[in-house]
Image 1 (tube, helix red, strand yellow):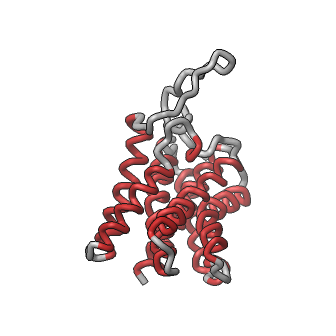
Image 2: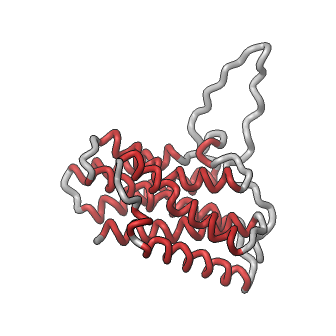
Length: 225
């Protein structure tokens, strides 16, 4: 039951992230729902395909689609009452990454996968939906941005979760610790420019471009309806 609730919360948060991204691109209501759904269940769908889990989780349980619709419509209605700071999209995305990464790791763990596979599938569950959302809105996926702590944050948090769980810590506490690490690292990358070391090859024929100034999503204006 705990894993199920965690999954639904992750779906809701990522649906909000997708709806906000749709609002920035001025999509209609259908576009909002499509982008919210793709963001919310894209990573989990890829995870289930890789694990050969059938039927896909959101096809077997209509509550997932209901949560997506409610979260997306609620976001649209909320935005109509005022302007939403652009950083809201990044915060929602970071929270969704944290929730889905740990939830995906737990699904792989219950399927009997080894630790390395659990971490990989957790990162896929957390990052793939946001990557699909970014591609559909004509943005470079956050997971590929210069020095971005996106997949790295998911890997760090899910690894911590597995270590703590296997040391005997209660699953709920281990999950919260893992999610906190994922969210903290991702938000640190957005707000303070925390990055991984960048690999550079310097040649006369291929000069190295100057580093990016920021890892935050470019959006000087507030999001509004």
